[in-house]
Image 1 (cartoon, rainbow, N blue to C red):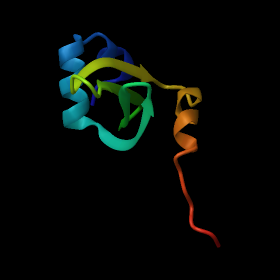
Image 2: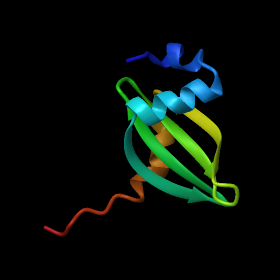
Image 3: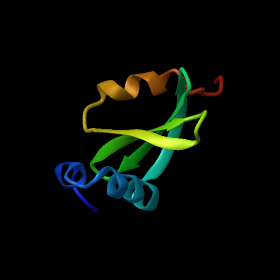
Image 4: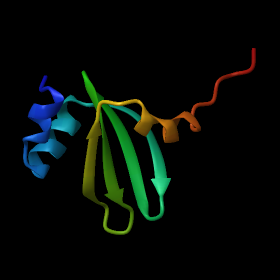
Length: 81
């Protein structure tokens, strides 16, 4: 697996392919007309922004910190105990 800096050195097309091959899908959220899919890649996370109108990847955002994960926390539903 590539490290975060190695991943960021790839072209956008290479990053997209790498995420789809090696990433583990975790969650999806929506913002305006974008579906934002969260993937885990060993030592970092990557969001894949997909335009719902054109059905194409328009942005990738990779990160190692926890702060960008907060929007996904609201999507977690745990059963009552």
